Image 1 (cartoon, rainbow, N blue to C red):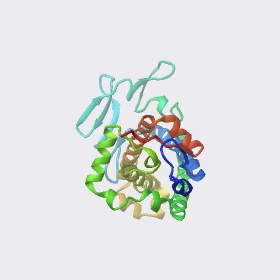
Image 2 (tube, rainbow, N blue to C red; image 1 turned 90 degrees about the vertical axis):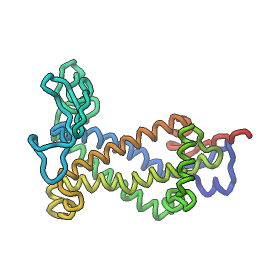
Image 3 (tube, rainbow, N blue to C red; image 1 turned 30 degrees about the vertical axis):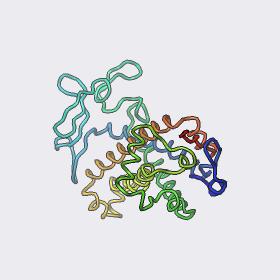
Image 4 (tube, rainbow, N blue to C red; image 1 turned 135 degrees about the vertical axis):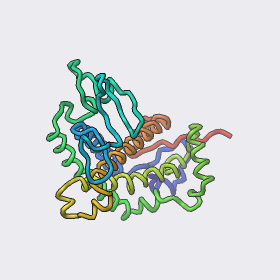
Length: 280
């Protein structure tokens, strides 16, 4: 975000401006670490039962809408509904670091721990899930108090016009990124993406995670009604995780396109050099 000081100086392309506050930078890097720990430990937990269901119940003989496994020919596959994709060597069946074939959903390099250990994965996942959830809550409250949400993230009425959104989407597809002071502000696509993550995906991850806990079901039985059962909550938990992974991939691609040195520097030091305006 651009500070008020930078705004009042009326900076132009080529100038250094203070873009991110210390709280934002700390939150970003802590969350990045938490995200990968939670993702990799979650994949190990999924390995214990690599199927997803809708409703209250789910076991080996119940119809799963998603499954990663090994077929009769000992080949790995991913099945979503009636669609089946061969994933041998990547998902379902793969070689470990010692060259041994393993029949397991996700490979060792994608999980935490890398060797099969459900108990340890659960400890990692539950411990850092609370750190992640508390950090998100504190950041959202702080962002409301310092007006970051209202000033920088809430779209203006004119930005929500379909023509404006489509124009911004076309510019991004043509790699025509903002220049000058506009590069330090959030565009409409960024605002919608960040708000979706902060207000939908992350709260959804937290609530569906709580729904899978028998203790929380006893304390808050409305969670089961909200998500349609524990197995539906588990499915939504992985869908939210997949959407977050997609967000991270797009985010990293845009960082590379916009200039990784400038973008990463701004998230470490807070200082961002405004791209020079295009010559007319």
